[in-house]
Amino acid sequence: MRISELSRRSGVSIPTIKYYLRDGLLPAGRPTAANQAEYDEEHVRRLRLIRSLIGVRGLSVSATRDVLAAVDEQQGDVHLLLGLVLGALPVERSGRPPRRDGAAEPDGAGAAAGDVAALTAEMGWRTSPNPPAAQVVAETLETMRALGMDYDWRSLVPYAELADRAARLDLDQLRDAGDPLQQAERAVLLTVLLEPALLALRRLAQEHHSALRFGNG
Image 1 (cartoon, rainbow, N blue to C red):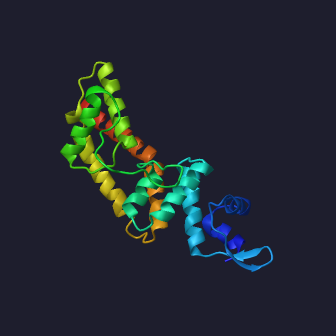
Image 2 (spheres, helix red, strand yellow):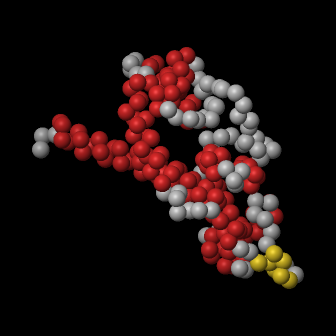
């Protein structure tokens, strides 16, 4: 396809496509004449992934380049690819994911870090060392305790069970995206775009159940 068709199919403007070509995020097309080239479905899929990483996940062009370099090396490992595009695994400047040798505990101080380890063990979850999400959970527990709430990992188990069901549903929706780049793009969209809606659904459900329990009709 010509660059105009590539723009239409991917939803990315022609000037932006040319910028990605110059910057190395998008591989060059097949030359057909002076200053002309043809592009294929691989370019469409890669552009859509670039668009989701920059426009949806909010990565910089430089960070996106590093992620794409790692994705190019890991397309045979969908699990690792999803970890890279979703930020569960950091990417080194070389474009490679960091080594995963040995066991490591989540960052954080005191009981909260231990709580995260206990919670993931209770759920039987296998995660990478020091995932950013574990740090968020640890910091949240520390804050709740500092505010006087008696909250530990056992209190989070029912929520973790709900999260486990949601994660299964997320991955079920990747089944019909057979290409790794398509799976990566859809994972970013489902994870980032749906998170505000999931929080909003929780608030709606809280309002409903509050009305049932405490409302006066």
